[in-house]
Length: 122
Image (cartoon, rainbow, N blue to C red; front, side):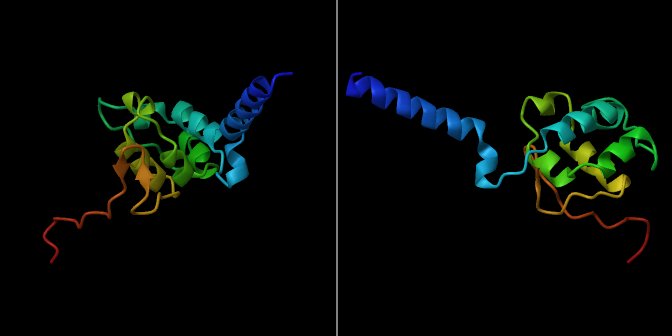
């Protein structure tokens, strides 16, 4: 076999392995969590329309509780953001008792600290 062809095969195999095995570098795979949260919480996290917060104990919150929400936020793609509002996703995670840490990326948005209440308290 020609050395050039052999080199191409080795390079192809190396690139394929790097793309297919991202967990080797210690990245956590939470794709299944993201799919579950997007399905079970779709009414609460959808972009646009009225905000419908889940109730603790419902199927959305149960799914959120079982998921790594910081990871789900981290892997939220720009295509996902066409359907899902990252701010609503963070709000739902907080409401369900699984808050995403301040400063974490949630898609293209960075989680900000909670705003102080403006109800007349100093």
